[in-house]
Length: 300
Image (cartoon, rainbow, N blue to C red; front, side, top):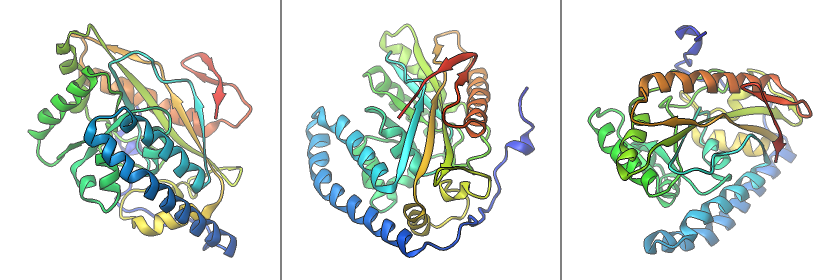
């Protein structure tokens, strides 16, 4: 049964989370994380620029190392349930909570993202996105979806795993917003490259624990970045917060071929990811996860 639209909507404005201001230890942790990330970026950035410019294989693998380093510096532990499909072409569709999703997903394997065009203009984040070969789409211009879909299809046909956030924006970490189907249609365009099918795999990002304790709704804006939240303050609060546990839950891949209805597929993916998010929020470490009736092992 699909969730009523009212229950799937995100608030227009985002409340501040209810945590106390950072302690001395928290501030020291945040400063240490920022210095660690700055040093790592100064080393990796010029190498990545050269790798992308010259088409080196390192250009695909270096971001994975950077994301792993960034998560460690921020005190974020990722527990993965299930696994990404090894088949290519592969289009990954995920719920979207925060800018942190990029590092959480990007730490898993070489891949690229689909993002709104505004991201390309953000200081530093825009540069990082371009250096991970992100496909940008102008969501306000409807005809640009066709251009973006063709670019995504070309990348899929070339063997790149592509990550799409079909909600079109980030949410509060509790709800999954309605999926847009337009860019999922890129999977059909990729079939023109001679592939019989493209796999479309649902993925759920779940902010599960803070400081070793299960999160509640009041805690989730610490990681969830949405509405009118200011990025610098959000970064600072997250770095100062202490250990954060994220569940990354892979659903079962769904074959996409010439007969697939992209709108029906978008609804299926939305429902499955909503179920996976609910499973992650309700579960505790040490319990057996079940995804679509199958036992799935945890791995960090």
